[in-house]
Structures are given as structure tokens and as C-alpha cells.
Length: 199
Image (cartoon, rainbow, N blue to C red; front, side, top):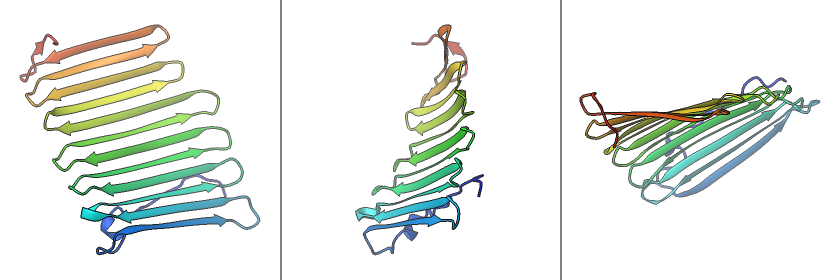
């Protein structure tokens, strides 16, 4: 039973986690083994509902074929008492040849409309070579932020970021780190997009 993919689907409609009038916690665990093989699979799910509308649900599923291939995936969602909410998910797999892959992300929203999200991935070939990438965005009443980071074995990493204020002024910067050292560049512009000196 080669493990080629693992999927995990959660009901993120938190109202379905428990009856509307109930408050408390529920939890379930399962473990399966395939007859005459070393393959196993397991899952775990937990949900809660608290006062003032708080609620959450989280789950995880793991599969292994006993031959060195395995994968695990998890996801969750939460809601706060004042309207804020957050969700995250991730998946990691490993092959018998030592290679691996990972991807994950999250998003959150505040009661006042502020938000942040991030997603990324990483992989390795099992021989010491790996690479990764991640992007993050945030928005709020004071402005916004967008950033990305990438890197690979033997190549260092590069991070770029852009900040934009509520008044339209912005900053764009890039930083690179490698065996030869660290380099950084940055520029600023006004609300009209014209280049200006950075503070």
C-alpha cells in the first residue's frame, strides 16, 4: 500500500462541531492496521464550544505503509468571542528514499477586520539538499504588509517585503544572505508612487 497522498477534510463550519446549546469538548481517536501488512493509519479529532460563541475544531490523520513511506495532515479552525476567527492546515510526507515534502498555511481575521495569512512549502531530496518558500500578507487600519522568503541548500536565502501605510506611503526592500555575505536594498515612495528618501 504505497503512500502517495494523504487528505484530511474537516467541517470548518464550527456550528457543526457541537449542538448549538451545548458547551464543552468532544474528542475521538481511531487507529487502523491492514491485515497481513505493516501498514497503519490513525486519526484524531477534537472540538470544543465555550462561552460567548467561542468554538474550535482540530483534526489530524497519519498513514504509514511500513516500508518507509508515511504522510500526516492536520487542520483546525477557531472562532473567538468577539468575531475573530483563524484557520490553519498542513501536510508532510516522507518517502522510502528519504525525500520529503511539507506545505502549510494559516489565516486569521480580527473582529475589527484586520487580517493576516501565510502559506509556504519545503522539500528535500534525502541527500542533504532542501529548499523552501513562504509568503505572508497582513492588512489592517494602519496599512498592509506583503513579504516572501525563499531559500535553498547552497544558495542562501532571499527575503522581500513591502509595507504600505494608511496614507499611501510605501517601502520596498530585499535582503539576501549567502556564503558571500549579506546584501540589502530598499526604496521608499510617496502616495503618488514617486521615489522619496527613506526615513
